Amino acid sequence: MPQHPETLALHAGWRRDPATKAVAVPIYQTTSYQFDDAAHASRLFGLEELGNIYTRIMNPTTDVLEQRVAALEGGVAALAVASGQAASAMAVQNLAVAGDNIVSSTALYGGTWNLFANTLKDQGIEVRFVDAANPEAFVRASDDRTRAWYAETLPNPKLEVFPIAEVAALGRPMGIPLIMDNTAAPTLVRPFEHGAAVVMLSTTKFLGGHGTSIGGIIVDGGNFDWAAHPQRQPALHRPDPSYHGAVWAEAAKAMGPIAYILKARVTLLRDLGAAMSPFNAFLTLQGIETLPLRMREHCRNAEAVADFLAGRPEVTRVIHPKYLKGEAAARTAKYLTRGHGGLLGFELAGGVEAGRRFIDALNLVYHVANIGDARSLAIHPASTTHSQLSPEDQLATGVSPGYVRLSIGLEHPEDILADLGQALDASAG
Ligand SMILES: *Cc1c(COP(=O)(O)O)cnc(C)c1O
Image: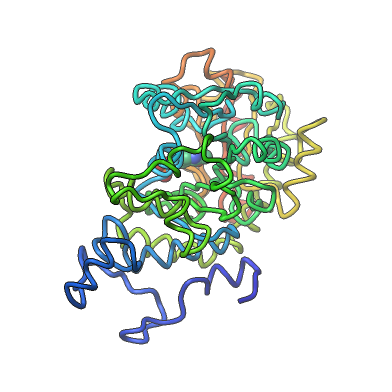
């Protein structure tokens, strides 16, 4: 199988339907699967053999999606779930239980911030936040109950690439895996190439690509030596009473280096039940067929917009990977070799009021709480996505009052620039 993303996006995990020879991936809209006989059923339930039992745990349509995303990310296996939020939560809960902690970059999606600062805390999992600009901060914030480190590849709103290799290399000798949220940079950055152990993505965004389906996925890099760190990773070494005392780091060995993702599927997904529907898996697969192609256009159009905004008098600052300075610029050059992504932000000289006027004047560009759509999107985070955060927390995640975020779509660039230009005229009041 060739390893180029354009080819994997069309072919990985599927050739044709074994039952009908259909080329398009069928939507297996079924809850359950007939067992061959009693012995077969008990082998499946005992994990002596992997196979379909019930769609809450696995489904043939979803399985193709999982194989395809695992191939695109360069991992060994994946687990699709109901949303990006479910993926973030389960990626952490798979290693950390009450009394444990993880260390996370402060530069996070607003929903992840709430999950980490409030809901996981209520569940007894402490999240310690550190500034990603300093990789050593992850080591300093860790203790013997630290189970994982967490960060986003290209976090909003600063769009400063996370130092993946620098941080992953510090964690590995300590037995601490780096979990990367790669939602904003699929096909552009492959975190496993830089030492990350787990990747999660909201498939709602660029993978689905057309604003139709909420979904999330966790990918196992198969590159982390869990068995070497029994003290650090008790979740994979404690006998699991729900599988007759199975120890995941050992039990999965015969199936390949998939201990992490197998445990997530057969314990967390089984018990918490945040499964992706087969229909959403189908729509996400449809989106992925053009992902590499779309990412190139997103990158090209976003760069045209960044250059346009940089020349406008109403704009005091353009936030785009190409426009970063110093260490952040060096990280752009190191990690974003395949393109700068489809996201950018800017600040208006006129502050909050100019921001509201700008948003209200847009005609072509949609005002929605999403990114990664084929259409161009805009939002004012301080009054929407980040409004549940305190003003201090907003600033900690990089949201200033006059900041506008854009997710640039696939329209003709001249039409995007024309709409932004007239909205900038209107923003001056
Ligand atoms: C949207 C998003 C999420 C959450 O995904 P949902 O599919 O909306 O639950 C997580 N991380 C990032 C970076 C996102 O943009």
